[in-house]
Length: 244
Image (cartoon, rainbow, N blue to C red; front, side, top):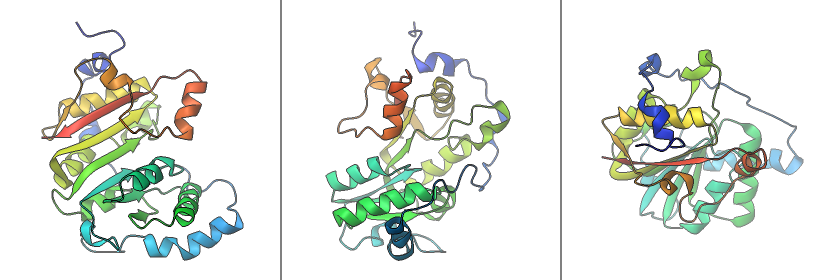
């Protein structure tokens, strides 16, 4: 019997919806919050153009970085960049592509990169889906989707970044055996994601016991958003899916 607090319990009864339609290549949500500090504004003008992905055409991820990298990871919507920065510093042999349309989040990460002087990060200040479309087959080893906007209203759910279409795109660009890591503090979004993983031909959910979705990954760097969720009494789910 599936435990009552198992996110798959809800997912198992989640009927397929019309989210299999193409997710629009339109960014929903805020693009900018508070006014940027002077240094942040300077970095947006000076550092971001150096780290931004090429504007058009196919992207060869292994040619993006100054030094050779063993593999390339992708973070979709990195928020304030704390997790991406921690991963980049802990895995200098890995190149990381980060996509974040929210200007203030991008500015925060640029300041972290500038302070640390790291060279294994490339960025896109726009929606990740067009970037994924430009990547070669089987070129990405790990993908992070951490605490995405849950879009809780039913009429807005097709805006969720996790969809049948997105999983199909990720299945194309991820290597067999690669990891898709998803975290959310919204039970409905965990169930939504598991339902789509369950019917995906490209991914299999890796969970054999409760702690496999209750406990974060080894080396996990908790973000400010997650700490806010803990303070407000919400319990995160950490979902790992493997590319078949």
